Length: 71
Image 1 (cartoon, rainbow, N blue to C red):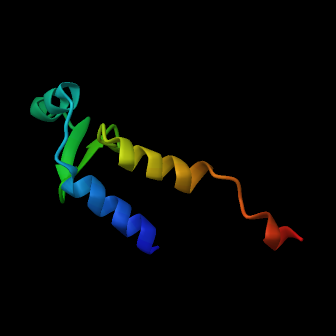
Image 2: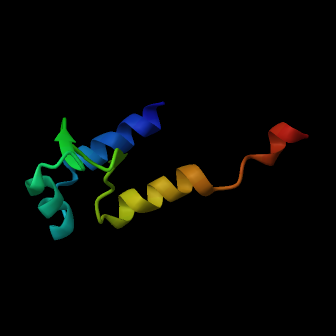
């Protein structure tokens, strides 16, 4: 669980926001909101355009499972 907490902190501290996300936040139509420095768009966490964060998410969720535990 430590890794996910670290990932959330990276997202919170990132500070990068694309114009389309800023515009959605400005609309205040409940499609996008910010809570505790995390942006939600259509009930999903907005992942900033940050290669390191994106790569970490892909690695944690798409790398093959450890085969040793299956043997």
